[in-house]
Length: 381
Image (tube, rainbow, N blue to C red; front, side):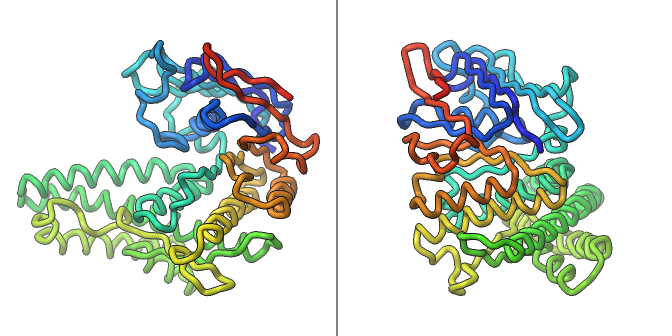
């Protein structure tokens, strides 16, 4: 089991200095709105690649009004032994640095050290907002299966930005486009293949589980993701399906240059993919379901992601569940905690009231979070 044994956050958001010793148990943070509970979950989320569960800009992270550098550090228990991880910036405006066991490493290395799955109130709009949020959801899940997915996404975005610059500048030399499109096709096909395999893994994880939460039927929409997913479902080997998708994407990019010049941007590729979901038992698209049904589907997919990652990696991911208990009745809360227990995962949860976590018993460390003149304070209950 991978778990945080200690967490420390210095000059981070509302926390001047926060430190928790967890002994590997789950953590239930409770207190009034605005006390700093979600800030701690955000600190944990920054132990994975990317901008964390709020997708915050760098200048939003340092504590105000001091605006010094910020730091988040943790000691992990992992299958290969204890590890130390630290991330932060030494001063406002400086880039975020990452250190693992005292050595500075690229941020992408975090994906192979610690897998984190989160659910936040902002994600409640996943099924009703634009496709970008749904792509982000499936990409984070794919990163758990394949840590290199993050590097592929960065490489694809970099090549696409360069291609878009050529389009806006009305460059016509095909040699410039050929090189960038070859890179986009290689990375884009790998991204599409990872997404398709992730969707298949989530479907299997839902089918294999007896759960109080409804299953969601998922499908990728857009080229090359949809066609690649269909090829895998038909039995084509992943390597062959990826090669086909690469050739198809490269041809589509070349053929679409004139159209893309008119638009000033690239209109074909995995950056335009969408994730469709259907409430399986009712046959209703998630976007048309009630708010409660959409939340239940989201919890179901979060748990399915954790189950699938556990099956693949042999150890459960960390779960960050922000205000999730407040939206569930007592029966569903107990069902959620039972699933966390069955996974063997360490969960970091927030809620406004301590009683929301009663059915966890001694399995979770309860911590009261309050806001004072010197910032947020933590008091193990």
